[in-house]
Structure formats: structure tokens, C-alpha cells
Figure 1 (cartoon, one colour):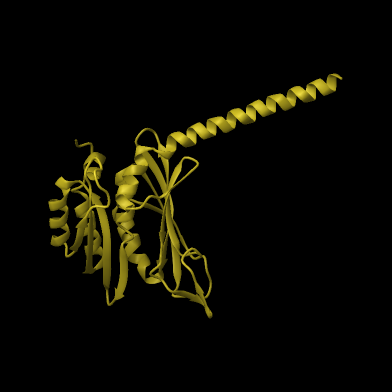
Figure 2 (cartoon, rainbow, N blue to C red):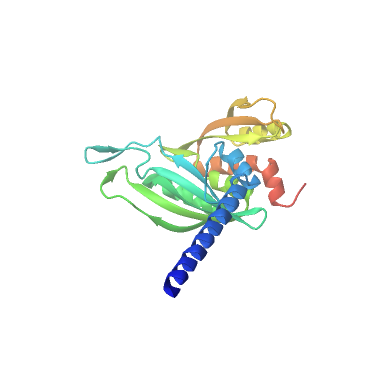
Length: 243
């Protein structure tokens, strides 16, 4: 009888502890689903992203690539999607870790830009054997204010190699009305042409615009142009403590 009572008590305590842990996890997850840091990152990348157990993930499929192993073509979800995960640190910062999927001939320029942006690159390796074109994977890591970190990480992934030392660069920024002129002017000064300015929503607060750009030329020069344009955004000003 004593053993039965002990077993019943143990089961009760385990159930209470499990329910408590589940409730705590649900509360924690619920509180992080709407973390304002995710709003900043969504604004930079122009996509909703995904929230998983308190961290935020951006997926960047390489739909521009046609990769084959022998006679088989690989689809983008199969080893051809770059990603970045963001975990909250303190009240305003994030720890970002991810992996960029690159053609072999893109590695040097992307590595150079990541280092210029102060992004750590702890690993560079392959996942596949016998693929054409050759695909490499760069791991990235960064920590700091959410929008600043996201902007630096995005600056290294808007490029396509055209050959003969030339690259194509395109992308979009989510901007406040008073940022439009300065960003457009800076992009133009660096050979990046604004191709569209529009909104995606109505009656949102604050009012926001999406600016798209495109340009071709030396990859490092284009990257500096994108980085210079980002300096005219509210996220860059906040990262250095300005109001």
C-alpha cells in the first residue's frame, strides 16, 4: 500500500511539473512571437519569417540556381536555401546565426562583404559531392541591435555573378517617408538604380514604403553602395545611439 501511495504521489508531482513546464514554455513562446525585434528584421528582409520556440528565422531560397548531380536537378529546398536564425539577447539585441548557400565563384566577394560588415564567418565548407555548379556554404554569426544586425547580414546576399568581374545586385528596403530621398540618392550615386517605390499596406502606422533597386558592376562597389544607403535608415541611426 505504501508503495502504491508513493507511486501515485510521484505521478502527481511529475504531472504537475510537466504541466508547469509546458505552461511556462507556452507563455514564453507567446511573449516572443510578437517581439518588436522581429518587426525590425521583417522590415529589413521584406518577408514575414517564422517564429520557432522563441527564435526568429528568415529563409532565403536560391531559386536562381540550377544545380545538378549527374542527370538529377536539385530543387531549392534541398540544400539550396540560405537561412538566418535570430535569438533574443537582453532587451534589444539579437544573436544571429545562419548559413549562406553560394556558388563557388561567389564566395570571395560575399566573404569580403561579410568581413567588411563585421560579421563572423566561423565555417566554410561543402555539403555535396559532384554537383555542378560547385556549391559552398558559409556559416555566419553576429550580435547586436536587431535591425542593424539584419541590415549587415542582408548586405552580403543580393548579388549574382555575371562573369568578367561583374555582378548584378537587386533588393528592396522598407523605409519611412522621410528616408526615401536620401536612400534613393545614395543608391544612385553608387550605380544602383531605383526601379520601384510603392506601399504594400494601407492605413498602417507609421506609413511605410518599399523601395526596390537594381544595378550591375563590381560586387564590392555595389556592396558599399547598399551599405551606404542603409546608413540613411532609422535602424542604422538607432544602432549608434541616435534619436
